[in-house]
Length: 245
Image 1 (spheres, one colour):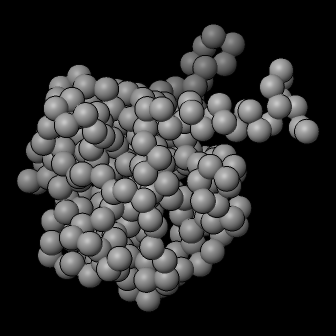
Image 2: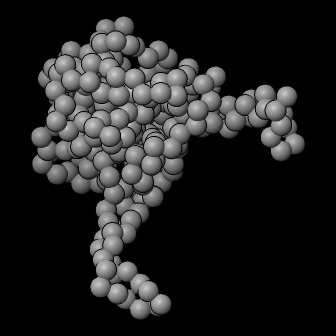
Image 3: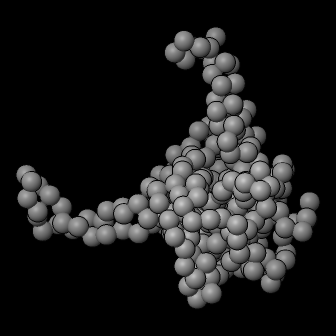
């Protein structure tokens, strides 16, 4: 029996399962998917709407893809190509929706609405930063387990009639396209508020020997940019061609 610290491997798996899923429901973890397009990896989230299934991600992750093109999805510790159908690309925000006719992910879906999230509320977001993930197949039906990070809703604005949610937290490359979720006190359930787009950065001069040098670098400000899930719902209503289940 493999040992990890003072507990055996099977006990570790049971403990990890309890820790992972005590807060964020398994259905949300199951539906956060690791994807790759043209060598760039990112995240996406699977949502059920009117008994059809849709994949929602950041537009810049699948930029240029059209119906009939192939997207790679990580499954069984490998990349598998799937032909996709484009539901829609938002023109005014960093959100795209597509469907995958070759497979349906089971499990309970989540209500999608950013209307009930409140200023300074705790927020969770999931994804695969730098392509990192946990490959414990027994926990997630042979899909990799995403990272979960936490922040707060720092502010939001309406830009071109689209809601932009600003989160206070540290985002990393690879979280783009991942879900932003929050706990709704009245219903005692998690809801899907939005999709991660990126983060604000600022340009600073690099330092060497405690002095600035003429080399500029981008630094992460800790302001995360995400778009309200209503953008994806609009695309779905306009072209409801998800895969029935």
